[in-house]
Image (cartoon, rainbow, N blue to C red; front, side):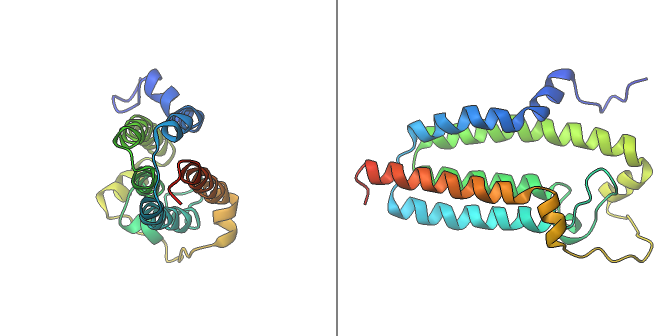
Length: 182
């Protein structure tokens, strides 16, 4: 019998192909972006904060092996997605375009909502009561201390997000240069 909290097939597809959809939305955002020096600087500061949160979370996460409640998971159920949202805000600020901000918001709202539903359904199936206790905030561990691990962040492929952030800002910088903002 299916759990009523399981995401629908379209939601599962959105979650699964969210990165690929990013490759559709990113050129559209770049097309309508009108970056300036101040918008690039302000947006970069915001985006770096978002990536910092993602990197910290990735260094605490043992995907599909355990329920993580250390690091930023103490405060957020999905700190990777919170970090991605902050990065999206930074990209919107850097783009200096209301249309770009709308595209970014649409992409994040669709894909992250689907990802959260899909991930939570998986975690409930895989970890049952342990995940429900985590969601309620009363998960107790067996005394093992979970600490940040750089090797874990790398194993979770977080450097790819760092490279993506650098590439996005390079392209925005080039567009600002081409538009005469420098």
